[in-house]
Length: 376
Image 1 (cartoon, helix red, strand yellow):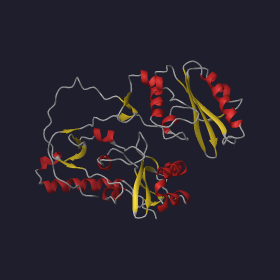
Image 2 (cartoon, one colour):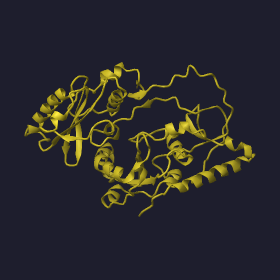
Image 3 (cartoon, rainbow, N blue to C red):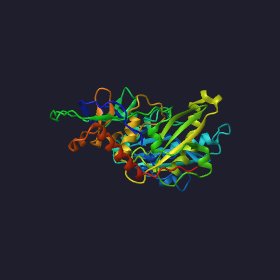
Image 4 (tube, rainbow, N blue to C red):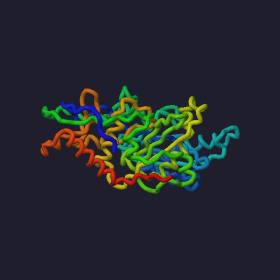
């Protein structure tokens, strides 16, 4: 386990960061998206048997085109009266495109799915509209964001000018009484540097392996956890993605790496096309998480990532909400750095060096609960 380095500052700390928390963005318009899948029925083929099954109720209708092994969302309709009626119009429009011999989608299969709601202001409807908007890219056949008018009228979410995303509102604290906080002895958690070897990440994750090799040769364990993706070129290995479940942190590693390889590698390489001459190669390594995702060992890793001043990654970073609930991790107000509180050990009347040793021993014991996969 990497040692905690730095001075032992004391001062006032906040247990929460006052920053905007965006609604989780849609992972892209290619199936699957867990946020959407939880709310909609399964995809069905557009035919005379399935179209009449669409409810004549208020709801949301999504149209997709299936080509090879992926389904791309191309149209989204929100209607507060009769989604079946609107569905017919949407299906007719897409069939005109499919029938066009000059079109690249002539061999695509038309699919659709839906969900119903009682009112257009329902929490799920508003969350979905924000989820799609935060993707940043419109579906192929849409010229405006679905439900943008609903977002502009809601009080349940707010738009962040800084992030240019729809976010959960900050909790008002006007009713709270002022509370003095005693000075706390803490250790600042060392931050990650993304492009350099990292002793903290190395302690949690297995060795780097070629992404294509582990996917094609099925070298990924069929278990739960998280994984990180890097782009290796020349003597540089640059971390580009930390992959985790947006709500539960851990997910099935094997299934998710397969989806990532099929869906994201080409798009990500386009983002780094300026490195093409250096023959960039995707690499992956993972950490199995069979137990809880909110123990102190996990929190240390989250703080390690969150303390980095810049985030060049494709994805957001996990664990901030979990850290906020852990009493032993605090935010230093001046620079928003996560720190590990060691004042809890004061009752033992230990020296600073002994306190640090106790913390490190505890963290090293915790890490044994993880099985660090290191298959060759």
